Amino acid sequence: MQTIGERLEEARKRKGISIREAAEATKIRGDYLHKYESNQFDIKLPEIYVRGFLRTYANYLKLPGDKLVNDYLALGLSEATKTSRSLNREVYGRMDISVASAKAGAIPEAPSAAAAMTPAADSVHGDKNPATFRPRAPGGLNLDADLIVKAAALIGGLVVLVLLLVWGISALTTSKPAADAITWVKPQPGDNLLGLVAVAPVELVTATDSTGTVLYRGPLKTGESRSVPRNNAITIQTETPQSVLIELGGQKWPLKDATGQFIKRSTVKAP
Image 1 (cartoon, rainbow, N blue to C red):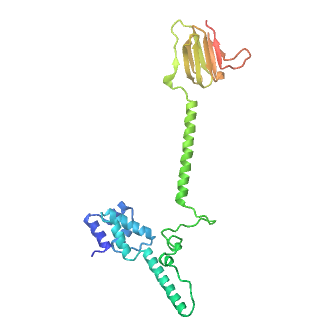
Image 2 (image 1 turned 135 degrees about the vertical axis):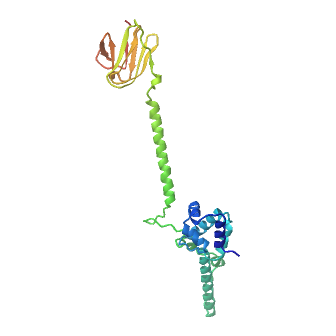
C-alpha cells in the first residue's frame, strides 16, 4: 500500500507539476511540500497547520484531502494523538497507584469515568496547545488581535461614511450654478443698459425686470461685468452686495441704501 507521501508525489508528477509550481498555487512553502512527499510531517508548526496544509495540497492534486488527513492521524504522529496517549498512560498510572494504595489499606478517591475518558481542559484548549494558544496582553487582558483589527476597520468605515455625508450635504447647500445654467439676456442695439460689475468674487447675483423676466442670474469673477437691457425697472439681488457695483451712464454705484448701508436687494427705476 502506498504511503501518503508516495500518493502525493505520484499525483504531482502525473500532472507534470513541479514543487515550485505547487507551492505558488497553494501558497505553501516548497520545503513543506517536499517533506510531505517524503512522509516527514514534523514541520515545526502547530498541528492545525500540519493538517490544513496536507488537506490543501491533496485537494490541489485532486486527491481526497479528508482521507489523507485521516490516514495521517492514523499514523499517530499528530500532537493530538500523542497527547491522548500520554493522558491515557497518566490515567492508567493513577489507577495502578490507587490499586496499590488499596492493598495497603488506604481508600483513595477513584477518578470518575468522565475524568478518565476526557483530557484535561487546559491540555486541549488552554495555553499548552500551540494550535489554540493566544498570548495574553499585559495587565491580564486576553485580547483578540483579529477582533481589534475588525473593530478598527468598522470604525474607520463609519468615519469615512459620516465625512462623505457631511461633504454631500455641504455641496448641495452651497452649490454654484453651472456654466450652462447661467441666465443672461444680452442687450440689443438701442436698448438702455445697466451693468453689473464685480469688485470681488460673487457666487450669485440676479437681475430681474418689472415684468418678472430674469435678465441675468449667475456668478461673477473679480473685475468681470455683465450688461443687461434696462427698458423697465430692474431689481438686483445678491447675498454679497459689497462685491457688486451698478454701472449707469458710465458711472458706478454701490448697492447701498440712503443711510449708506449695503443692501441685498436694490431696485433701479426705469429710464
